[in-house]
Amino acid sequence: MRHATVILLLISALLYSPARGDTYDSPYAITLDPDIATWTTDIPGRIDTVNAYSNPGPSNWYNYEDPTWNDGIGHDWGVTVPQLYSTDTPANTLGNDTRHVVNGGAIPGAPSGVNTTTYQQQRLLSVAKGLIGTPYQHHHNPDWNPYANGFSSAPNAPNYWDWNQVSDQANLETTSGQQISNPWQTEYGQGTAGIDCSNFASYIYNVALGIQMDTAIGTLGEEVVGSLTANPIIAADGTLITPGFLNGPNYASGAINAPNSLAALIELFRPGDLLFITGEPNQPDNITHVVIWLGTYGTLDDGTASEVPLVISSHDNTPAIFDLDGELPPPGVEILPFTDDNWFYQNFSHAMRVIDPSSVPEPGELALVGGLLGLGAVIWRRKKRKVASPSS
Image (cartoon, rainbow, N blue to C red; front, side, top):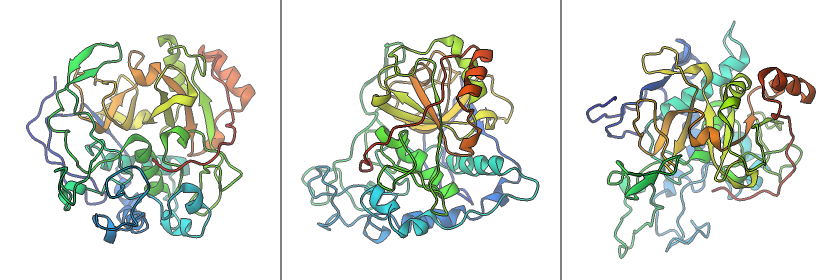
């Protein structure tokens, strides 16, 4: 078992990472190219740009008396967390010129001798790595911290904010349905900085690559190209991205994925892929979580290869996912296994590839790969267009 004394997460010289004290020492790490610092010198400025064009802007993040700050979610005085975008819905934002500003401008090109896909994958994962330890909250922006900036937890206070409490229940349920005592109940029964799973995925893509996409978990994996009102994925230069998709072996069947398909999936995934998890086994209309595939960049904490595949996400411990030391990480951004006995894999629905989507095999090629790997049920699909929904 791995234990540690209280850890203070330092703010990285390159990337913002909220400090948090806890007693969890992860056995995992993200190990990138030794030159990654020189590939990401623009990241702090890009974070500043995303914050500057959030809605509301930073000067009004903690103005609880502003009656215009209201998205109708039911707080006593209408406050919600700052959006990643400069207008109230993805369709409005992506349909006007401010999208170029929010994206932060052109992404620096890959260094000489570095493959563009490798460069983009490592930029993305460097931003994700900088957020490890960020608590789970239903926030769009990890820099927003209400209780450290004038908000109150007292229900009768004029500056009271009724945050969405997470992971403060006495017991948690495991993938197998067992009830366990929640070791994080006391620490996380409060309003803190944080981010949730879909906003984590959208945020790191926006900061690292200037890519904007919907932040609602129910539609994030349903992005399509062809209309600025259909939850598009838009690159830093304003062009539309057509993502690639890979189905799980039991997609839409309602069946839990069996252990014998995991090895084949590992061969198909690439670092940065978004993997969507359903609340009930393989029900694509019930997406409740998204994780990011780490591939070979996911290692043990000493930088050596991990014996199991790893993902990173912001997870609220419902259900509880343990590391291979048997420890339960705190709710928030952490690296976790993607093993055949946990919920991530058992309820995996489909993956979306945004970085180099053309690398997803065409239908005939994928069928051949699936047959060779014993995963014939995995197929290519293109999403049907859906009506845009507000961010969540």
